[in-house]
Image 1: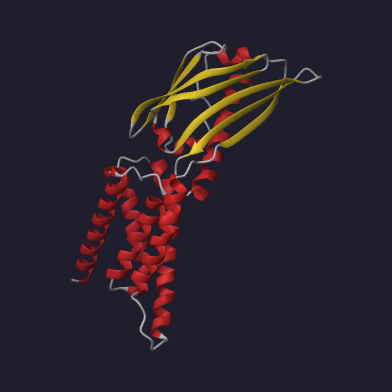
Image 2 (image 1 turned 60 degrees about the vertical axis):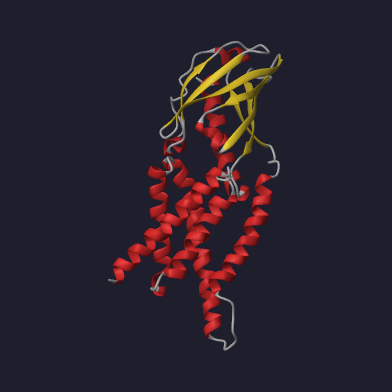
Length: 294
């Protein structure tokens, strides 16, 4: 009977958390701290509040988080990459909630003074943090800049950006986690006003396109600006510019600098910005090698 009650409790918690996600999605807050910290906090608080097995609280919370993340792949239409990115912070928040409540309950048992309900106290703290974090999330996000450089044999030109390439060839293993795949590229030319259209295939959202326009052209520098992006990547970040600069060295080689600028659309920024900077760095290295290295 106890196991059956635990099952109903878990089912009820998952239902409430799923409804909370739907509300966040409806309010266009699904990319903010409210989702990645608020939701696991709510889940953990409810499990702690209604679970009658305090000795296995951590296990109960982690089980609920795991089930929610797995269900999100089916019910919420998210790919494995979303689960991998969100899982560490979900588990960390759950563990912190259980730890804090455990310390509060311990202090309450060691004292004869009346105290507020530990769950309500912890919820109050998190509500304050959520308001502050949400304020930070909706503010203008800083532009991130990531550059990669490489010295390639021979005196190369920007005309290399006009050649046909297979963007899937030698794609870094990191992107096999489930990121949208670059399945095609259209457009040509290296003059101001020329376009490139890169198609990305998402296993959950289908095909979307990133459209880039050349807005600056110098002898050894070219700058693309993102003018449209309906790929699933815009769920996580907004591309701004991609610039390629060449520097011909005295020994006859070419130093290439590939610089990308973007804005992280996920919160909290302290967690997601480093992940996205790493992904953009790998992307820049891959594109530089694809176009300029043979």
